[in-house]
Length: 74
Image (cartoon, rainbow, N blue to C red):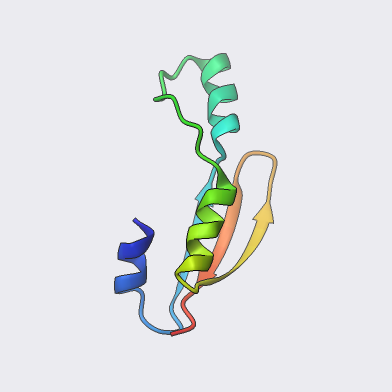
């Protein structure tokens, strides 16, 4: 998905993303029984992919979601 964003996001374009980490998904599923697929999704892995694509980003953490402001430096 990030490769496609890299392809279509114009130079100096911005993307705002909110994402829970895998542990949060597991916790919510435990309490609410949503039946979410098993996920060991790591925000650190996603951040590594963002860096490998040369995106610049800032992070704002909240108790429920991690928010990213992503910029394509062009």
